[in-house]
Image (cartoon, helix red, strand yellow):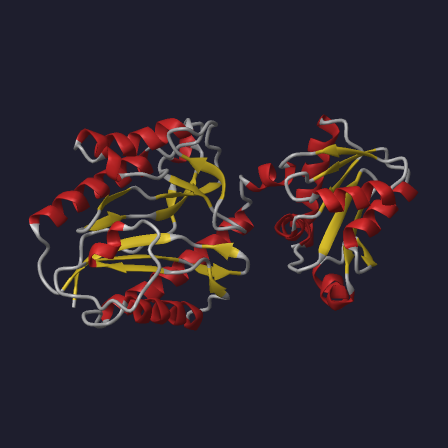
Amino acid sequence: MAEIHAARRERLRTLLAAQDLDAALVTRLVNVRYLTGLASSNAALLVTGKGDVLAIDGRYATVAGEQAGDVELVVEREVACALAERAAKDRIRRLGFESHEVTVDLHKKLVETAEGVQWISAGTLVESLRVVKDEEEITLLREACAISDRALAELTDGLVLGRTERQIAQELERRMIDHGADGIAFETIVAAGPNSASPHHVPTSRRVEAGDFLKVDFGALYRGYHADETRTFVVGREPANWQVEIYDLVFAAQKAGREALVSGADIRDVDRAARSVIEEAGYGEQFPHGLGHGVGLEIHEAPLMGYNQTGKLAARTPVTVEPGIYLPGRGGVRIEDTLVVRDATDGRPELLTMTTKELLVLD
């Protein structure tokens, strides 16, 4: 793993050189983890042309030595200021910093600490590196999704009729832990009946009734990587005609979106491929959110995929495809997969969430 993190830092150095920066101070914790492998609540990283320095407080000294032993370690409580002082000592002149992360007060302290250093916004350089995953990351995402699938399969094999949304969410989360998850990727959404018309419903004590749509949006967290999956079911009896109609539309839209995921595709074109299916059926206003987003060390990463987003997809970019139709007072459907964009020569994207998308009737 040390080689992987060293390679990531080398890629960052290339970006720094292109912006005429001598070094970068990385203070966003998820980016520190990406570049070193260390997950902590207090760390900062100085990436320079001559070497890299990781500052941590005493709580992480041992684990940092084990997980990030290929970088120089500094043990200080005020990690960012310690590295600012180090930058001044090493006569770094143009120092990039994460302006989207550093507060005004911290910036003032850094400037006061590092006399002679010119502080320059580096933007989201590390986040731009994180868009395209290496195969080690994809392996971890694949396992997070497999854990999610196994947990959902066990849940749907049992009884859901008469149980509360909150009970179902808690059981699904427990089953993910039982199957090896380190935690949940985000707060699980379980929405039954009319509640399924709310895209981000918070589970309640409402009991699942016969004829309900049951929408489940969930994911496992595995070694830092987040799965994201949504399935919608009918409970207790065969679906009504209106339920079949909107489910089939969302299914067709999701299929169109998945098939548009190729390396080099314009993000807006991918969104349009799915959205047009729903709009042409007269439900455009009932699909109020973007088509999907990147996933990785965070549940929502670049690229965001929507009608107002720009950019093109690159190979080895994991994204979600999650169209939906929501009818207030009645119910809603969302179908979501996590997939990896592959090179155009490889054909289809790699599907990571394998649970069937057939409309199932649960007991």
